[in-house]
Image (cartoon, rainbow, N blue to C red; front, side, top):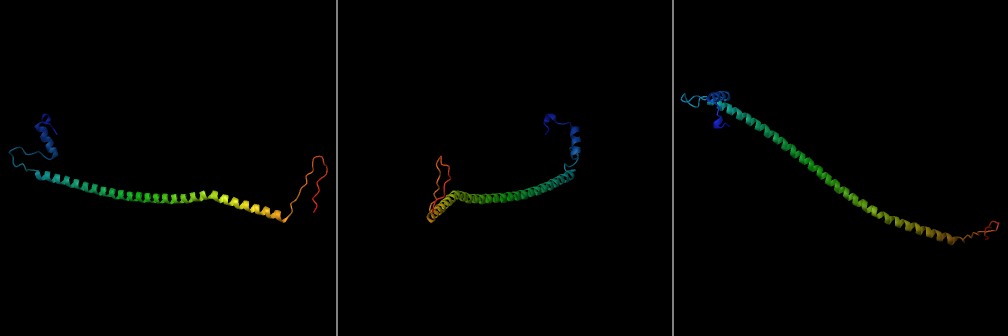
Length: 150
């Protein structure tokens, strides 16, 4: 806005007014409403363009809102799937941990069973046949040992 010190000259003001929308009639030359219909039509045209632009903008905003809600829905679904998969994996991990912790007990049980079976086999073999004696020759004897007599 121009301050009173920088006011354009009267001729410059008329020139600018003619560019903007026509010069105002000089004082005393008729009504001040001369040419107002043109100015009102231009203003109404400007407002119509402004309303059209606002309608486009509102449509674009609605599109963004729709897109945003779809994106949030997709992110929500992905988050739910990730949480579900995480819970499933934690349950599997707990089951696997239980199985791994049971392995040493199984190994100990199997070793006890094998030891028991071997001990029973050795005991049964000793009971059914007499012990075999092997004679080892002493140092200096040059003969081979003979098999035991039955």
